[in-house]
Image: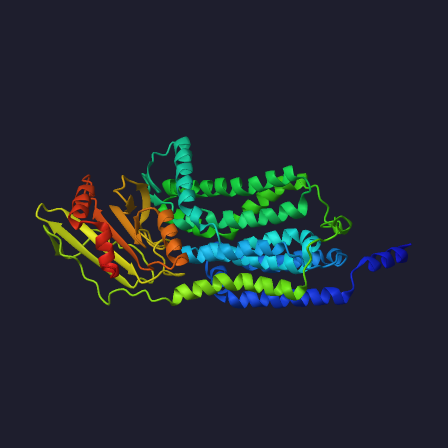
Length: 509
């Protein structure tokens, strides 16, 4: 009986030559896409290796291989058939890549590349095989290093949780943005303490467990919700614990304890806690098949020859890549030198701040700074940044660019009243505070909004507009209780038309 069943199952498998040929086509197509978009592949690999937030991505590739091997016997019973409609999915990915490239959003380019890889598999192997491999294909999205944008929100949430817990324990505390002052000292919820690295890794782990250990979608969703909520709460408790220990045992002891405890020990405890609670509710056995091949043998319509499918995939990918290369090659000159402007009623004086601060703009063509004082004794600091064009690592707007250096000691505390077409914020470090007003200009658009500047950058790249980008940042130190804003506003008014000033720095006027 067992021999008969084995023979019947073998008879259901597709000829090996069909699968070998289809996999050869897929391997060649993937190789072509990875070579064409080698820059995005390299960027992702560098981030996986160098960023502790995304070190877990190094495990995603072997997990993907394991997921496919796990389905190997089942997939072998399905017939690979090139399928034309899947080209549309690849085209969406190519369009997303072009938009990401135009706007200077690396994550959009990387998501677009993943979609093109997914779409090429669906195109060459067909809908039935794609449905059999649906979870591994979806899990490929976790290769994209995304999520650091949540750092400011998580910092603020962690600080607020600490304040609640400190209030419950009777420890007097004052909060200013992400700074918490207690009798033990001043504490800052730094980027590394936001908990984002564990949250991102926990979500990736939770999605895998939800697929492998649960059948019920209700249980899957509940488990995933726990994978989001528990790390956030646990990180808030850890931050509170550090302050609590510092209050009773001293800051040095608390810092030493936090450095030892906070890391994979902390993450391991969080995983163990979530798994211990979820284990009794697992409703999928380890030997349950990933899918039923009998349900995935529907007739395939709108098939296409493999050679035409490969040509279509590569053409769809080459069009946005070619346009991007053309725009990149277009001349976008800026002046060889720029100088501090002469402003009526203001003189340039040495820059001697209480605590050193400069905005961070990596890869700028020009970076200029100066301190001004007017006849009334008001002082304002001017910073000018000019890019001939923006590209990966040389962006006007992006994580780690702007007023706050993620590796520095200054932190955002609050947004303040913004001037027309600008942004205003308050930043702080131990022993000093500042207010900063920022104006960004790209392709005729001046704004303090990151979204508007990204849109202007996208329009310039897509429509072959002016690529030059300028940031004009005016800042003032807070001395005692005196706000620096009047000095900043007076300087901005004396500076004149921001559009004209920025265009002169960019060499467009």
